[in-house]
Length: 89
View 1 (cartoon, rainbow, N blue to C red):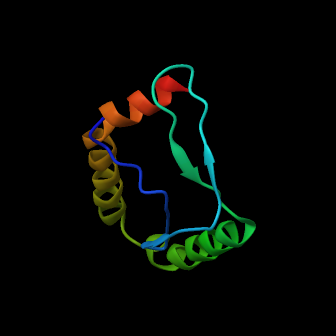
View 2: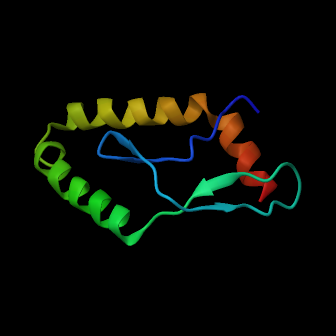
């Protein structure tokens, strides 16, 4: 697998790491270590999403389409790796 898990959460453009992790128990393939999301991290992400609404929510359709297409391109670029991790579970 060429995709490296970072062990971090991306919140408001910043990689955030917590103190706790957990190990997956896949049906096949290697186990992965994932970070535990805390209530504080969820709150931080929700507040960032609310703040982002004020720019994204009032952007034009064209600006939104460009933004969403960029996200789709990034997902497509990692599709094989995402599928590999998902099918192990």
